[in-house]
Image (tube, rainbow, N blue to C red):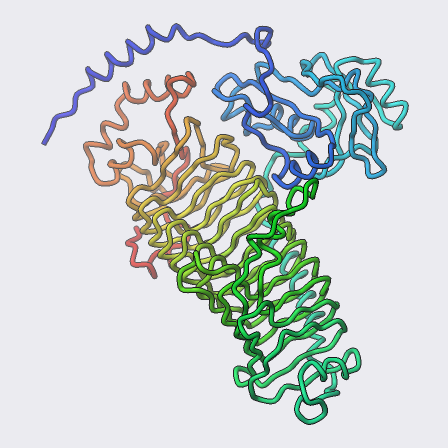
Amino acid sequence: MKTVTYAGVAVVLALLLAASGFATSPAGGEQLSPVPFDETLTTGLTGVDVQQAQAAGYVVPKGQVFYSQYQYVVGYYGMEALVSGVTGSRHTEQFGQPLGVFVTDLSGTDPQLTDEGYVTLSNSVERGWARADESWFVVDTAARTPAGPTTVPFGDRDAAREFAREHDGEVVDWDGLKSRLAGRTGESDLEPPTAERQQWANETVETAQQTRDRPTSVVVGEDAPTLAAAVEQAPANTTIELPPGRYDTNLTISKPVTLRGAGNETVLDGGDNGTVVTIRSPRVGITDLRFTGVGESNAGDMQPDNGSEWDERIRLAYGYGDAAIRMGDAHHSLVENVTIDTPSNGVVALNSTGAVVHDTEVYGAEEWQDGFMSVLPMYSRMVVEDSYFDGGRDAVYTHYADGTVVRNNEMENLRYGLHEMYTSNILAFNNTMRNTNAGIILMTRPTGNVQVGNDVRDSEIGILTVGAASYTNDNVLVNNDIGLSIGTSRSVYRANTVVDNNVGIRSSTMLPTNDVFENDVVANGQPVSASLGTLNSWAVDGRGNYWGPVPGFDRDGDGVGDRTYRPTDTVDRTAQYSAGSYTLAHAPTIQTLRQFQQSVPGLRGSTIVDPAPLTDPVNRERLETLNVTTP
């Protein structure tokens, strides 16, 4: 056994102290200069909001901040996010004090407001930056960004007064703006809005399922010779019955009727040519049917017109491929008790808010590269529930489908289970994912998404998050390469069970403002990996996370250990298994070195700190079910 001494550590510490000189930035930021905004780490708006504003030529006021203990310049879309970034306790704790704050200077640009309140510029004067404490801010006008009302900044007071007069606003200085906005944004609410989203989903399903109760008007083969003839003949708000059999069809439905078959014995076959059923009416019901013979086109060869909307390429490639069922303006329509075999899409919903996919099975290509999406909401807020998805690319892929609810589904053998693009305020609840590249993946800086009660196993990544103000709570992440990947800001991670993954939690955020607490992170090959040089403190109100049994933790009844735990620290990690490592972790020299590294950003490693580690598991019963020994 090797004997560890501390003399070498002391020498290293002395050299670091002598070499550093404790160089600091100027207290007031007088020598700091703004940087190009695209070189900052940005937060404050979703990716889709930024894309839409830029495509339309709208101005989004911005700010940027230099912090005393953070090596990156942080860029904020919107004055509201900026004020949160310089007044919130979390930012001060982990970034240090703001040394320099700069804002967009709209002086000389003659800004105007559109009818919707978006800011446009009349003059082509190049917009510059002004120090926030020397700037003036116009509040209480109709000005807005895609995310909501906004404050308009000016470096010149007369320009601010002119804009305020023209748009019925008020001019305030930097201190006045902070007093107005401080505390309104940026601090996370620890409870996710699960109940209200469940309620919306319940009401939406109830509305769509009213299509099941329509009286039968036409029986195919008895009252009409073909399915197409039956659809033509049936009055609105009635049901078309399809007896068992195979129906060759590429059908379009343009009125509110219901197709009802006899389950898997009633087959609609598209002949491997295009979409099988296209819906162009609200309140259409498709129930008790099997679909096959879907075409293989994903429309990937379609090219957008010059000058088209920014996302037309996505809409063409993803939204206009072949599908078993395609909805367009089919609000409150229902797909229920349907089985789909498809080499491309299963159900595509375009501009079809309130549509529901319930109790449906979709079987895609064995190799995900050969298939496409099982359910694809695009510009549609819909419900996908109680369904089974096997194979293909993604079980549910969303594009600008804010507020969609995906609950109680099983997904396996896919690229991604739930793939959220340009979509905020989703609820992913109680879904089971197996054998995926990622069970749930959030992209394009969304906000307000909720992932609660999902179970992801045997995948490359369990849940991967980006964006802001989201919730990842009470999920089970077992036997994945990476259990949970955190890339958000101002988000909550609570009561997750992260067990038996190669890496329990990967932290890739460069804005360490998340609340990570009361999670069970045990029996992983590596509890945490942090890819960026930032300090993350993972505890809320004196409660951190459970990391398994660690020697030296005081278990005196309050359930909280008596020392800080660093899951990214090699010494602390091995302390779980070695009393000698525990002694080394508490050596005075090691403690001094750590404090010094945290105070000097250039020496700070990629560090996760749990100042209040739990001595007892959060969900003991769940861990015991997973064969994890608990104290």
